[in-house]
Each structure stands twice: as structure tokens, then as C-alpha cells.
Image (cartoon, rainbow, N blue to C red; front, side):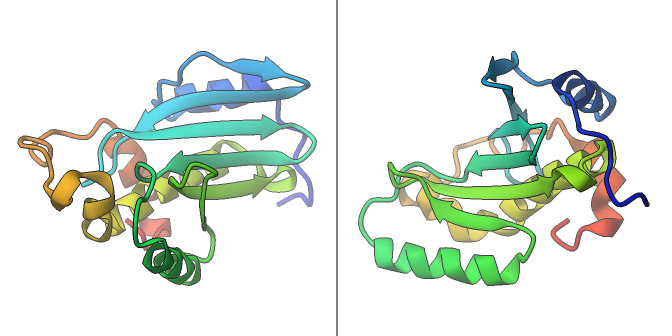
Length: 170
């Protein structure tokens, strides 16, 4: 594998998303940085809104808000996020300014290609699946999953299967 891949372009990343069978929203460009929003489904966690931020000189950040803003019990939430940072070494957990828990995966420019993009997106969906039960109370009032939610079929089965052997999260 070469030490450094060519700088990724926004058009190239968009074509990788198409090749992975993922429909992204419109691209936003500002100051040489491009961003897309898309919705991922894991095997258990559905409708995970994900943002991709590409800075061709640095790489790609894949991030998602895992839950609405956390109210009381922030100390417990901080401990949980720190534990998850330890359990999932290639992912970062934090809190947004408004208190929403965030999961992000970074891909340095030197490694950014279609396979690494797919792997990062599958990792995000897989982690959200693994943490589904722990996060229920953060996502839904009283931790009650809405009726019919778990019976729905996910949109990204092919993506998850493609990377399942490389990701213990899946």
C-alpha cells in the first residue's frame, strides 16, 4: 500500500458513496471543505443521521449525534462516553455544545479511499447497534422503542455485510 494516496476530491468521495449504495443529501462546499448528510441503518439502530466532512488536505470526519441532548445525569453520561472511548479505540465519543452525544471516526488523508470510507460508515452503524440497549434511555423517553421500529428493515444490509468480517462491532 502506498504511503500516501492522492488527495481525495469531493467528486471522488461522492462516487464512492454511490458505489457503496448510499444516498447522500446535497453536498455543501465552503472554503475548500465539502460536507454531506446521509442516513445509515444498522441491524438494530435505524435512521442514524451521519455527516461526512471532507478537507482534502487533512482527510474525512464521519460523525453522528447518537442521541438528543442529555439532561440530568451528565456525570454518568461522561463516564459512559469515556468507557466507550476505551472499548472502541478507532472511534471518538464526545458531547456537542448542546449536550448531544457524538460518535466520530476520522480517516487521515493518507488512508482515505472508497474502502476506508465504507469501513468507517459500517463502523459507525455497528457501534450504534452494539450500544443500542445502553442508549435506549438517551434516545427514547423511558427507553421505550417506538412500536414497529425493530420490525423495520434496514437500508444498509449490503454495506454491513461487505465489512462484517473486518469489524468486531458488526
